[in-house]
Every structure is written in C-alpha cells, then in structure tokens.
Length: 137
Length: 202
Image 1 (cartoon, rainbow over the protein chains, first blue to last red):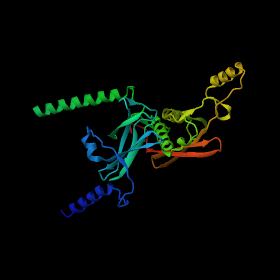
Image 2 (image 1 turned 90 degrees about the vertical axis):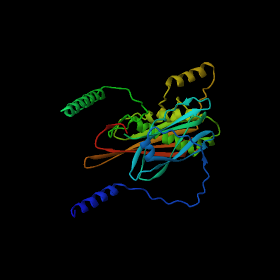
Image 3 (image 1 turned 60 degrees about the vertical axis):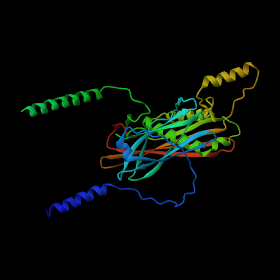
Image 4 (image 1 turned 180 degrees about the horizontal axis):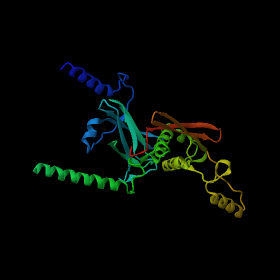
C-alpha cells in the first residue's frame, strides 16, 4: 500500500500535468457593442459538442457591402484540441455561393481557450452563412 | 468451447475486415480539394496552405477597407512580382489567382492581364489585339493603367529537433497605389507544420 500511494500520486500528477488551460484577463465592462446573430445549432457529433462550445455569433459589414461573420468558440476541455471548420455562404435566393478560398481551415485551441474565428463573404450577394465544425482525425 | 469458436469467428471476421480495409486504402480515390482529407507534407506548400493563406490575406485586405477608397470602382489592379524565396519550385499563381478571383467576386477590383512585371504580359493576344484594333481604327491605343499593383514574397523557415521537423511558410503581400508608390495595405500570413513525416488528413 505504501508503494502504491506514490505511484498513484505520480500518475495523477502526470495526467494533470498534460492539461494546460489558458487563464485570461479582460475588461470587466466591455465597451464593444457587437451585433449578435440569433443562431440555430445542429449537433451530430455529441463528443465534439462536449469538447467545443459556441459562445456567440456576431456579424458586421466590411468593405461596404460584404458580410463578415465572427463565431466565438470555447474549448471546454483542459487539453489542447484541434478542429477544422468551414464557412458556407448563401445568397438571398437561397443558393449556396462558391469561392476560391472557401475550404476547410484548421484551428487549434489551448485548454479552456476562447477564440473567435471569422470569415468574410467575397460575394456581395451573401446574406446568410453556415458554419461547419469537425474534430480533427 | 462454444465461446472459443465464437471468439475465433469474430477475430477472423475482424482480420478480414482489417485486411480488406487496408487494401482499399492503397487504391487511388478522389478527395475534396478543399476538404480536410488532403495530404499534409513537410516538404512542400500543399493546396490547403495556398488556400488558407489566400483566404486570410483576402479577408485582411477586405477588412482594412482600403479598396473602398479608390476613386473608381472596380479599380484596376496589376500583378507585380511575387518573389519565391523558398526552397520549392512553386507557381505563385497558386496564391495570386485565388486572390484575384476573390477580389473579382467582390466587384471592387478587376485585374489587368495585358500588363505585367518586366513587360511580361499574361495575355499577349489581348494586348496585341487591342493594339491592332486601335491601329486599324486610326486611333492611339488607350491602355487602362492600373490603380493598384500587388507584389509579395514567399519565405521558408526550417528547423528540427531530433526527428521532429518544423517548416514555416510565410506569405507576404503588398498593395501599392501606382500614383504615389505607397503600400496602402500589407498582409502577412504564416503557416507552420510540424511532424516526422507526411500524413493524410489534418
């Protein structure tokens, strides 16, 4: 029993040692006034939903008439995680718009890190968006 | 005994599935060029690297709002020299074409194909036909001069520790207004890959 205790303690230390989460400091009363988007979420991967949460979605117009979407994500685990995501853009007639740079992108989040991903629709006809997120293999 | 036979059957089935699974993996198949199952290599700039760099740089340019300040929209842009300072032999059009298409889609920029660095034009036929048409009409050819030029550089940085290799590709671009030669917008995107060997999927 005496020899088992240090081994258990060492194992626990090793496990917690791997988890390096992020501490943050920010303004207590934020001055920014983002334009939030009411979003609809479809979860097909519950494991991913447990690891990654969507904090908020906000939008803006850039360069005059181009839709910019920013989605703030949080890694709910204390371990670093890698995800891939993709933005699809939809025109006012419901048709999906294609672009030369609209592929899957990678994001790596440290433990408990909150970070925003954003994209700008290069087509001024874009009025809606769809964000797809998947866990890395 | 019955249990052993069942276990043996399950093991055999699993082995067959595993072996056939391996066999199909060796066969060539189509994958989405913009998807997450493309090959990641440490020795070259992959298609997803060009794609990510172009996307981030276009987003940075559009978010800066400089394109809106041009006196005329769409403004004309010429592609200047993109220096390749990497160890790879790459076609820089892999980056610039994506940027050109994206900017063209915005309706704010059109690219001239009859003007290029060191007099090398992209579309010689269009340049010649324009000159010929003007000559036949007895007019002086009026070439639309670019308002912007796009120039840049590709850099590579390689380091390794033990058997782990790391490569960083840097994509730098500058948008210059021709009338005053000032870089109105500058963007830089770094892509770093680390590992021991190339792999499929991200």
